[in-house]
Image 1 (tube, one colour):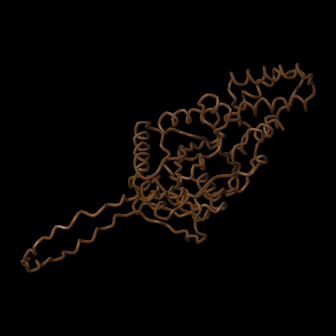
Image 2 (cartoon, one colour):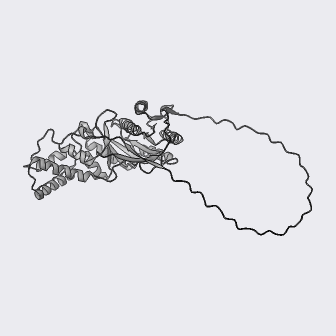
Image 3 (spheres, one colour):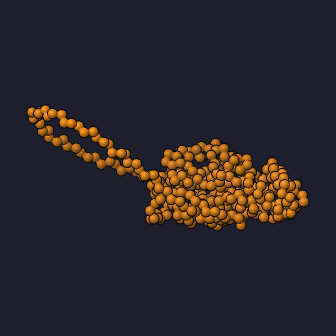
Amino acid sequence: MAGLFFWKKKRSTEEATPEEVVVEAVAEEPTPVVEVFAEPVVEVVAEPVVVEPTPTVEPVVEPAPVVEPAQELEKVELPKRSAKKGIRSLFSRVKFDPENLDELEDVLIQADFGIDASMSIVAAVKERAKKSGASNEVQLKQILADVIAENLEREDKGLNLSDGKLPYVFLVVGVNGVGKTTTIGKLANWLSEGEWSVFIGAADTFRAAAVEQVATWAERAGAQLVRSKTEGADPASVAYEAVEAAIKADADIVIIDTAGRLQNKVDLMGELDKIRRVIEKQAQINEVLLVIDATTGQNGLVQAKAFAEVAKVTGVVLTKLDGTARGGIVYSIQRELGIPVKLVGVGEGINDFAFFDAVEFANGLVS
């Protein structure tokens, strides 16, 4: 996989030691009172005024305004990651029969490509096979991989880490149990390995376990954690404090964990809107990443639709891809929602995730 280049501000080589920041109110100190004593008034006697002839005034040339230098950026290559070993083949349990391509449609439907997409893919494979004269399994699998990759490739699949307006802010959303906290830890670690300074805001404040889990991942990833001192605190206040702390520390990126409730979309919408509003008072939001468990199949698509309605999702993270041969959910999400899959998780290890690569993914599915 090619190198992954992004831009960040140049900074000194001194690194801040990761530490946990606890959000709590700080009492303001009273302003000291300074007594002012009047000076005695001295009467001034005016001197006789002598009128001098008006001197010739030379024109004054204003100096040119000083133009501040533009923010200097540096190009950063982040560590490479590959998900190839974790992608399971569509044909691990069934035989690919080049003599009867109609059976391929059933395989694709079972892999969560969806009925319409499966029919379209099979039609494209048949057409290309006829034009090229392909007839054996190897040739047809390559055609299938090419068709899938071409339909999955998107120009907006990369993370928005290029405009240099730091800190970059990511909101991470998704229902409980999909691997949201694990994703945050993996992403933070990957960025830290690229020498980016990372803050994590533990804004899923309604579950004490969620805060402790993200604290553990933050420590492993070398990221600084911002958390509430009390359970059940306002998530938006934690998000605000996390961004504020990152700005004061001149950090590169802030990742905000959010609650995973989906039972009441009205409440979820209100909460996410509030988080967005308070963050945008200080910085722009670069990404809203929706985490989906690949093993949930079409139910994952239902979740994606629900969150897309309320959260202004910019990209999808597909987790547990190594535990299923139903990776066609990637195809369904991008086709039906128009939202790119940006990251994939293929294990529980801190390095088991990668940028989504359409060619790598397609080749893994049909290998």
